Length: 186
Ligand SMILES: [Zn+2]
Ligand SMILES: [Zn+2]
Image (tube, rainbow, N blue to C red; front, side):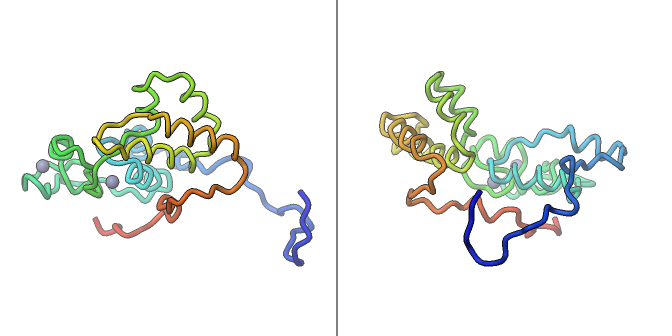
């Protein structure tokens, strides 16, 4: 890497470097941590899933001690921390149990469904951020159906050819300001 910018270029190697990724069960082998690590986060949108998994990983997840009242059916049926809605209501309305916005399929779902081997290969080579952009296109069909149109394939090809260059797509990337800590009190 070559750079000619200013003097804030590190000249010595980093003194302390983590050799392994952060592990929440390195010093904590409690049942609670084990249980949370095995917990599969479902019924929420991709963004809320990220948030909840982040909380689990960094031990900020506080499980519910008793079921909470669902904002839709008003029964005490909410079993998961940070969810506002019970699993059934979220499923019926096809919205996220946490942020209550429509749930979009994940990249994996769409790729599975489309059975499009080319698409699978192409998405594999894209950085995560661009993959999400493509996914947003796939989810944004006028008829509400999720499908991979020729236009999307063309965009995807363009993206692949530009990988490494900053993308010039006109989509704000709302996924970048994460993590947030707005709902600690729940
Ligand atoms: Zn409910
Ligand atoms: Zn959500």
